[in-house]
Image (cartoon, rainbow, N blue to C red; front, side, top):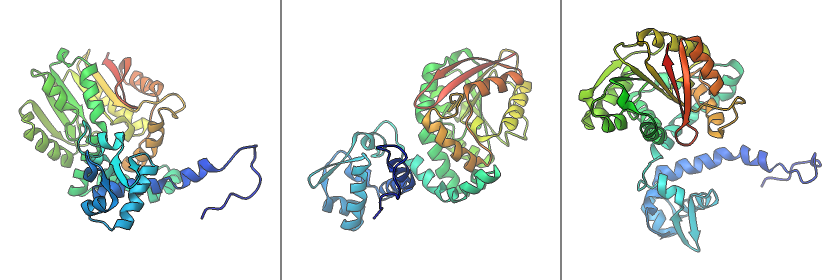
Length: 337
């Protein structure tokens, strides 16, 4: 039992509820991960089940099925009517496997990275995160890449809706992951040729995915390190989607400089990321994810629109605009001078 905090409140009506909620928020995360892992949202699907039927479907004891299911009700993901449980709207759309977007791969990837957060205080003290994405084994790399693809799927679709790629002949996706941003572009623009540059283990996953999609014939793959290896030439458009937040300002400026050197005059640079306001506190998701970027890459952060404009200007690029995509993500467009 949590007792009331000792002492009189500093202001009339002030309570410690916010602090207590934040201090126990990791429990909500663990409940959510467990519900996904045992298949609770899939089990409910488009149906309504009582506790015995739900426990049988997910193959866990009735008592612990109730503990998890009732927590999901309290958190707003399940709905309960007497003894019957059903998916709430958000769970049905994003966690049941029936909706247009499936965020279960994102949650599974976050679950794998969760233990690394035990080192977060040390990362804050030293300014250096563990950089676990550079040490993933093949299975963890597959789970991590699927998670990134899952959470960025909305941005990938919004990008192809908001930008005219038909004006370009060849597009190079730098740090392109599994190719999830390229697939909708390839689908909509049959004449465009693309390149995908990423670390060799990630490129292997991208080749596998794009071959299954039958788009690999229009994509050239490059395995390498963005901070060390030469940027391929012969492209008139470049995409950096969820890349800038991996690096320090110094490394980003170096990357943009080398990219400028490999790009022809007038080339476009498209930067998709969680660009923030000048205080780095909005959008909320971006402010929170700054810690994740620090932990995953070892040096990551979030950047404001003003900061990326300054980085671009310092490296020969001129920012021409910013467009909202979906959720906290937005597109910054720049041109090589």
